[in-house]
Structures are given as C-alpha cells and as structure tokens.
Image 1 (cartoon, rainbow, N blue to C red):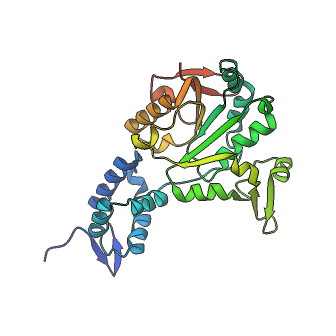
Image 2: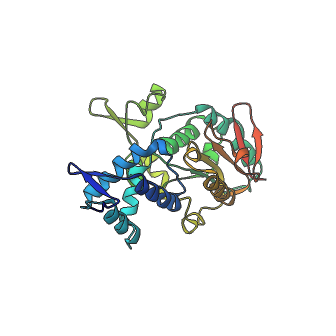
Image 3: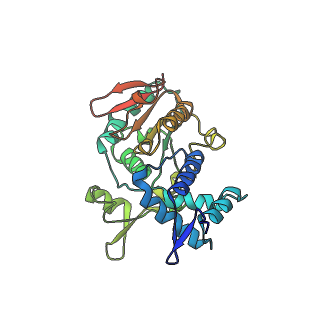
Length: 287
C-alpha cells in the first residue's frame, strides 16, 4: 500500500522532514529568515496550528493553497506566527546613551539647518524599541526642543504592529524603566498589571509593515539619519544579512549611523560601513 508524504497518526496531523524542508525553503525565499533543524518543533507546531485554522488535513493541501493564494493574507498569518518578538524598554541602554551623548550631536553638526532628524527602528517588535528611543530623546537629549524628529518603526509582523499602536505593556516590559518615567509617561491599568504609554507618544511614531526581502517594500525607506536594527540579523543567513545591509545602506543619508545588537557585527556582513567606536558603544556609519 502506497503512503502519501503527508500523514495522520491517530488522527493527529504530522509533518515529514521533507515537508519541513520544503516549507523552510519557501519561507526563506519570502522573508530571508531561515529556520535551522533545531527550530523544527517550533515551526511544526505553528504550521500545524495554521493548517487546523484553515481547514487543511494535510501539508500538501495547505502548502499548495499557501503558495498560490493571490491575496497573500495567509502568508502574512504564517509570518506573524513564525516571528519571535522578545524585548523590553531600555534594552541595551548603553546604545541609547551613545545616541544622545555622541551620535546625534555629530549628525546635527553635519545636517543642514532646519532639516528634520529621521530615525528608523526595525524591527518594531511590540513597540518597546521605538518608544524607548522616543523617551530617551525627550528625557536626555539637550537639543530635542530645537529639532523636529521623525521616528518610523517597521516590522514584518502585522499583529505586533497593532500591539505597538495600542502601547500596552506588562510588568516584564517595563522592568528597566525608572519609576519617574513610568509615572510620567504611562497610565496604569488592571491595578498595575499593565501600563499604557500616553497617547501623544503613541501618535509620535509612524508604524509600518516592511519585509526586508522585498525590494518593492524597502525602496521607499530613504533619507534616514539613524537606524536601530537590534537582534534581527541573527535570524538571517549570510546572504540575507548582506541583502539587509544593502537596504540599510541605501536608507541612510551619507554620514548616517546604524546600531546593531550586541552579538551582531556589520564588519562580518558588509564592507560598506565604517566602524565607529564611541565611549559608550560601537556604531556603523555610512561614509
């Protein structure tokens, strides 16, 4: 008796190694994110969840529908469940200190008078990253009242972007915030179990959806002075990292800077950027 590649065991959907490899390659082509074999359980669990949600009994049926769906809605759902969003306010704070003490002052010295300062935060995750940047500028940058600042924050996950816009956070997210800032810029909810960032701060950031592997989406991101891209490239392989580096290079103004996560190094990815060592942190500059 012939066996199909996809199967059910005791009426439970399972995914074969061949099917996992097919999905992994497809997801990589679409997003630039590659799942190693160690992520097999994570991927299978979420993929089977989407199969059940959409009424598919076999991987073959689901994968065919996913690949040929014209609207791309299910692909976006898959992206949303497959991407991990773990962060908190003021993470790697030394880079924020470097921003207000060194990097922005150099940028403003070389910037035409009256021109806006533009910052891109990617990925948005659930919003702690861009809101941390905004809070740090307001509280600790001496020139904030003299400069118009535009902050754009982007993510491939549309669900987390909706969470960003709501700006509601639990105790874990705000654990690093000084009590003074928590009281000044947040409203307590559910007897202190959750906190919502004030509306004026939520309105100050433009949240957008972008896939770094899609040139049609990235080419509109231009003329930024500073980019924060922390702990995203660790999920990419070498080819995807180089592609992302090219996107960031094109997005920056000459003399602009990018911060990466503490375990990431642009020097190992691209020769386009110049390494700059400041007292508090390392940044990478577009010549």
